[in-house]
Length: 242
Length: 239
Image 1: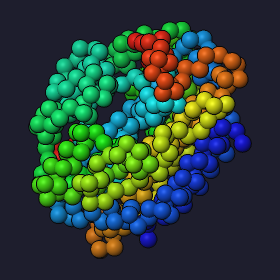
Image 2: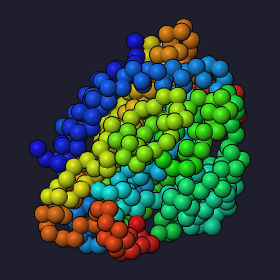
Image 3: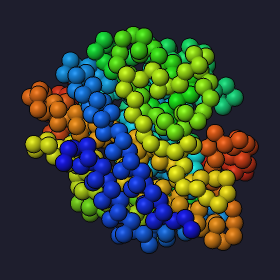
Image 4: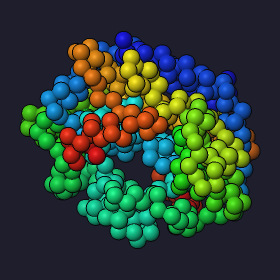
């Protein structure tokens, strides 16, 4: 029988595996955040589909870092002047169009000290690899979050013959299973996907460690604290960038 | 203990408490969802602010259940029905003049029910969606952070057939580091609740001798055909 307890038990084991196997990579990620933020940089986060949740989770609440910027496909409509009909055309999937990564990249004010977090479970789709490749070619540090079990089981699809993790200066394995669903049923299907939960834990724990490091260094903490004057000042400071 | 480990431990212990405290209610909610789906209905999800994460967690995922649909404000924005500013400022959640456009933007059916996700459970828009659903004889499930809901005197639960609790503090602060408030847990806990619901809905179908409408991962051969066969009957109500 599969029920809530099955999931609770299995996710608990998985979160232990995630922390135990990735703690050194999480520390490296926090150190990269620290350096970037201390140089007045911004962390750009890009993930296709559900992966963008990682960025959303560490933004815009009391206790959140401000210099985090989410690169969103919808920005093509809101910032890039692409008509919504073209963007949402189900017969001509927008993110598969050639050159789309460069166009997205060009929508933003990206500074040399900025770093990138690129997230994809399978790590084989064009646009995430193109964004990681562009960021790297432009001299930015690139952090990849992927499922190593998933990505290693897939054939590469990108013209470079590479997978996303091969573009990472730091690679964090979210430890999710191939296909993302955790629990095997009696049939072919597996149920209960885990990547959002694992990715949130990665992002939240790294954000916390980053704040601790910044605090140790005695620098201004770009963290929302609920004080209107303070939070408005921070939002102003990063306006147009984050 | 280092702060990263602290975060993981906090999530694990909250998940464990959430299971122990709410397992009966999680089963009850899964039953409401299952009954709705058995009757040809879709569970229409609406998430306020970070509540969108819960909506996304159940909306068209590999290993997820098919008849869910996210009522995304972003889709309204892309259709020029509301502005990005309306969403970013949060004004949209207290603006009842938007409600007719809201129903125009999405295809829904009287067989559908609602799952409304709101940390405070007090935004006029969310409460009005719940009120109208109930008036129309449709079931409503609310997901709120109960401590926060109580603190602000929310009213969403007045119109809910059942509710689940994000089990976080008010305000939702994961930890403090030298008096600095750091991080949050409510969305991660909510995502775990969403997956517990997925497991229970799966059981709902299987225990009745039926095949559960589980979406397959794209890496499984034939997944496109299978997944389309699950979603096509609903037309635009699920995709």
